[in-house]
Image 1 (cartoon, one colour):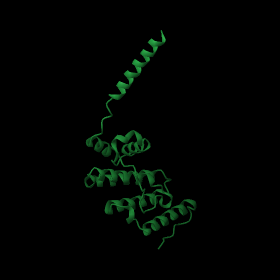
Image 2 (cartoon, one colour):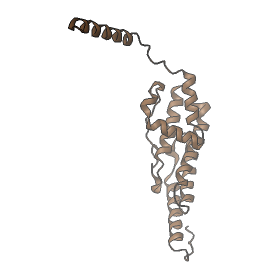
Image 3 (cartoon, helix red, strand yellow):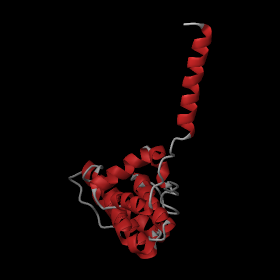
Image 4 (cartoon, helix red, strand yellow):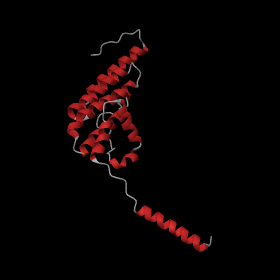
Length: 187
């Protein structure tokens, strides 16, 4: 093949590619209904829902067409890891539900389910700890849940709640370490 023919062939291929790319249809935008379907699926009080949300969190760029708000302040003014129990992911999940439902103007109708999902996610975290720590973790989870359910914020978790949980944890540790010693009531 001569140089001229090769140049013409390459130019034709290049022009064809440019024409194809120039007329390509952009990815279709996500509808509000599609966004709400994903939001609902990711805010159910189930293990499948929690796992799906976490998978989405780990692959955020794949969900960019949905324009989800992934920002978080974790557990707001309450400790993210009270007494060492790591509540960061449940708090982030809860923030995600609140922020995204507020963005689409459907927060009041979905708040109870998002709060229930939060409690479920907290309980999943508690289930990962040794059995002697779970009652304390579950107590804190209940306090965090009641705060968001009642006030819409974790700012209602008081120092007294944390102190009581610390006492329960200390008693549980003492019981496990020295089972022959009876726990003494703390006044």
